[in-house]
Length: 368
Ligand SMILES: Nc1ncnc2c1ncn2[C@@H]1O[C@H](COP(=O)(O)OP(=O)(O)OP(=O)(O)O)[C@@H](O)[C@H]1O
Ligand SMILES: [Mg+2]
Image (cartoon, rainbow, N blue to C red; front, side, top):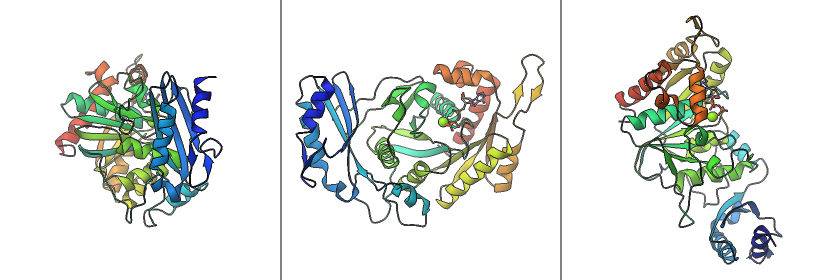
């Protein structure tokens, strides 16, 4: 039998007393991953019983550990919410009751906000539209702030398309020596946790919404971030569950909104700003990315996505304009190679733009 079959056989001996069924027949085991002698899996439980499931989680882990060839086993509980429940709850908006995000935890009476222990500031990097450069900005700002002596972490909350492992040149799996806390990885002076480190680069994440929210919650609460001046959270595009969960669960110092100068991106940026306003998250400012393109042939400055839109919008909305980043191949090539442009060409105009924004955040006392 393969190791996976042995593991499944062991889990089929573990009975959920609530259902009177074993974990495998009840279809409660999800996301089983085996790498070498380490086994990870998720146990999906009913939200109503989630608080009482810890003994079952432990029993499942012990059963798997007893399988010959398994040296480490880590089971995560996630609550099963009814189809679409998390989305529907999220849609109720900030004024509605706290959504049941199916986190496998007892629901607090009021949403208890907590920063990860030891972390002074949590800053979200957001945009309404996809592909405008949130992850690029996050990676470069993180490295720039670290180079200025700040203790920096990056939480890649783009659970569907994590890009920070590649941009920060981090690979390998975070370890969990005690099966409860997760040790993040580090590169370029930045501490990183990303779901991309738990799944392969080419592996699509097929977990459903509530499970992803559980994963986000874990990345916030169970990762040993250590002492950080700032934790930058690279968000997926839009104003969905991840953004709402983050704003509800964590007292954010604020959000940085990234936009291209293009109108369409700005319209989406306004939606993002509106969401954070409604969630009472301060907007730290707007960054205009892909602002100008200097032709390396003729030296002429082009503005493929228009110019000045984000600055004008920031003024209109009364939020700070943090700076503009030129569009340049070097930015993309550096990100793809795992060392952001602020490290690869620190004197170049693109890097200068990032240094200026990082210094601005420090100078304004945002990060302090
Ligand atoms: N200033 C820039 N110059 C050149 N290329 C850039 C610049 N900013 C971002 N890119 C490239 O554009 C692509 C999209 O950027 P990025 O992944 O950072 O956007 P995103 O907003 O995080 O996207 P998503 O919404 O998918 O998470 C990447 O290939 C990135 O390298
Ligand atoms: Mg991204």
